[in-house]
Image (cartoon, rainbow, N blue to C red; front, side, top):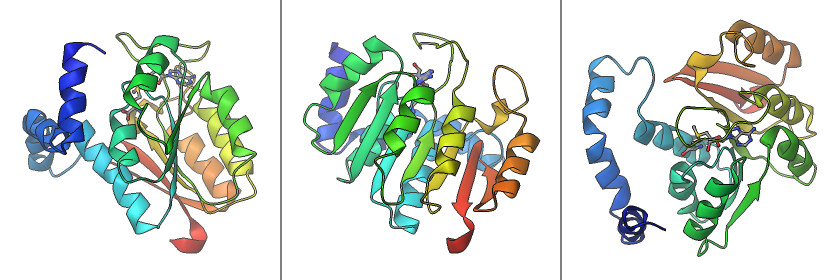
Length: 214
Ligand SMILES: C[S@@+](CC[C@H](N)C(=O)[O-])C[C@H]1O[C@@H](n2cnc3c(N)ncnc32)[C@H](O)[C@@H]1O
């Protein structure tokens, strides 16, 4: 771990990192509030949105696709619930293994979530909050053959025998029919036809909530 990561890790351990991170991003957060919470929410807000669904629906398992540096994962893992995160990049996976070494409730998987999630979901027997965020971006991020495995991930979740998962999909703005992202209308039609979830889009997050508990 480099010095920056060590400082961050220390601040997290003493419970200060999330407040400091919120301050660091305060300009973005204030701008987002000032524009009526419309458009893409800054990352500290997105983490809190994910967390709010866990509390609201009393879910005690979290599965994330795309670990990246593990910021959202650590925010959630801190609650002590069972967490699994899948990351394509070997180097990001290795760094995350160091960061999450002391978390006995976190399991990390190195691989393509389009392949790994369908395997993983076979062993699941209770509702999960899925945070689907594995995709290509600029920078040190890895890419598989597809820009995003979202279609494979969603198919696997919708086919699962449990119909009470909470499914949160990041980057709603990218769902325009390019780069392997389905068009948002196509995705929403697929959800309507499935009949088990109702969809809602805000703060750049597509939220699929079971109809039976909405
Ligand atoms: C936007 S970042 C994830 C941020 C993280 N979920 C968070 O909230 O802090 C996207 C991550 O997805 C990873 N990724 C890209 N394609 C993937 C795939 N097919 N399977 C798993 N991870 C993938 C990238 O390497 C990158 O680390």
